[in-house]
Length: 374
Ligand code: AMP
Image (cartoon, rainbow, N blue to C red; front, side):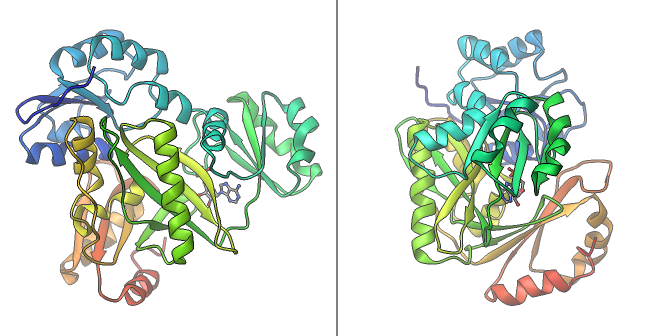
């Protein structure tokens, strides 16, 4: 069943975080109404939604209520219960389906899907338990990174192992779920491609972002990524190939490692708008959020164009005060704060996008700034 959704109709969003908020803001510009399912009352998305359903994401009655009020349903995070989402597809219009969630919430399935699509991943083995890790680790060698198959984010649920004597450090990860052990990749850069596709199969990628992490959390996205043309071609080809293989509807963020020789390996996928695509709100003729709404509503997609080189910097809890104190000095900063009350350390509170004619200068300015020193 394929539908076209029009302004005045209601888009239901599962998850009330900043990604939902920015989807909602984009949709509301065109006159859509927003319903959000989120367990907390005062969520970033709840603050801008027309209808709030305050309940756990997997609450059956709440999902039925969301189905009742929504003409189309999307999600802003991937750790939704697969069975619950699958049931929802039977009583509501969920054009993205449930299968992509099933694949991307499990690193083992995700890596097989990427490989089956014909794209390269780091050498890895899937291990159901610690004994399997011990038995199979030599297929990967050292150093390697053991990652829980389920539930990890921002570097949580990961352990780097340098030699067999350290292997037992990975033991506790198996209390959480099965794991993958993957070869440590000596990458020179990390980049991401946000690919978006509608039911008609129209597919577009946003300009490639170069991502700089600090303490495993995204700090900066630089656009365009400072990579060779041949690497850019490989990155776009890979993202489109994966989108096509998965018959994507909506948004997929494809995170990649760039190697010394200019080739790439795919690290992981996120089936939703992504932090590394926030720059597109100001710096492109179509933001990842507008394009996502177009895709799930069955509208034709727009070919993305970059207006200007840009840097996006995340505002974590510890940066809120210094950013607020400085922002009157920087008319070129577009500031986004997500409406979260508690500025806890390392919590994503907002971001700044800076469009610039001098990328190197702007990057240096951010590096030298006391604001992001912590
Ligand atoms: P992930 O949760 O898989 O995105 O990993 C978080 C971060 O850890 C990545 O953005 C990389 O900086 C680093 N990382 C993950 N996997 C590897 C790997 N196989 N080799 C080297 N660094 C990695």
